Each structure stands twice: as C-alpha cells, then as structure tokens.
Picture 1: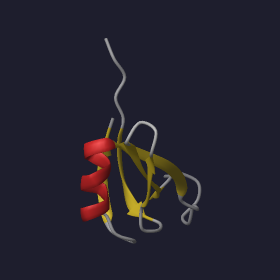
Picture 2: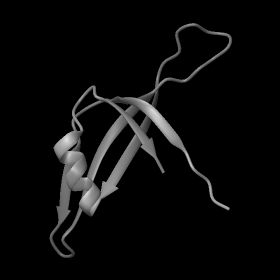
Picture 3: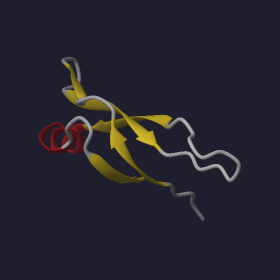
Length: 75
C-alpha cells in the first residue's frame, strides 16, 4: 500500500538548479500554484507547493519547465 498525489498547477518562477560539488548530485527547485477549491467562496488564493527534483529529473526540469507553465506532477 502506498500514498500518491497528483498536482495540477502553474509554475510561479523559473526553476533554480544547484549542484553539490562533493557528490555531483543536482537538485532543481520551483514553486507550483495549485487552485484550492471552496464551496463557500468564489475567489480563493492559490496554495503554493514547493517542488524538488533530483539528478536526471532535475536536468529535464531545467530544460522544459518555465515560469507560468501549467504542469501535472505525480508523486
């Protein structure tokens, strides 16, 4: 048994990448604005989710993810 989440939202800013020189691991970080639904309010502020991707996936994120792009993330 495991837990899974799927997020659909827009990227707030372009991802930022960091490489750790001692291990050569790479991490790419960005924030995702996800619509939070409410049955009582029409306009609800987005919920911001911090996303990290490591190594090979970080390389793909840096090549494809841009600011304001709509993305689907599963994890």
